[in-house]
Image 1 (cartoon, rainbow, N blue to C red):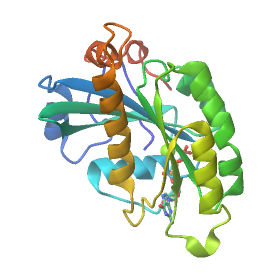
Image 2 (cartoon, protein in one colour):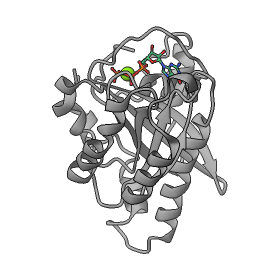
Image 3 (cartoon, rainbow, N blue to C red):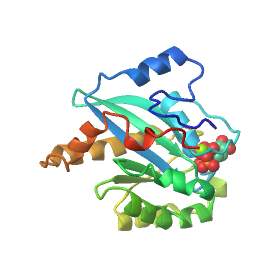
Image 4 (cartoon, protein in one colour):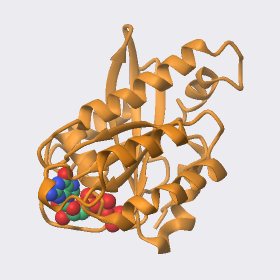
Length: 229
Ligand code: GTP
Ligand code: MG
């Protein structure tokens, strides 16, 4: 997925197979809330694959490293409320960090991903958590995802250590496989659930998650300015 994001684009920019449907979905203003989610983590951990599995139920073994940032839209329902998810897939490569961190603002939830067969990607989790703290708002919810659980023989990151780190950081935790479609929907749904719960519990006006959700019904300020690449 090497497309970059142009101003105010609301379509899944990668959906070339059904352009009319993608356009229709993206332009659809008939929703109760919009949640902006970001997928972050080191390069090659499987962020793009995870999003493709969730949004399109597809997987490709080829590695095409993301350039800049991209997004897809998916609609889910909670308590008869229609929630439009705007899911941003960030490039893991260091050279895109300035671009990608600009998108943290206004994000209500993060999928922070590492690869269970890649120790460095797990060691980097703490740094990614710091980036979230630095660039996003205080109540942003985070789900830590150890991807590639299908590669058990190549595992170098034990489950328990990851769970413990997630607990320490206050994150939810899943091991998952974009390839085998294990825990992909569950990870996204947990994120949606905790955002929805936080939003429902919040009694404040503009500072609340619901205020933010309403504000995000417009294109986020970060995405209005033109191509991110
Ligand atoms: P950047 O865009 O560079 O940040 O990388 P990324 O995190 O988006 O990684 P991507 O989704 O492109 O996946 C990298 C490689 O890992 C690809 O070859 C994928 O096919 C492979 N991959 C992704 N998820 C899985 C998985 O669950 N299991 C296995 N075995 N391979 C996976
Ligand atoms: Mg990618």
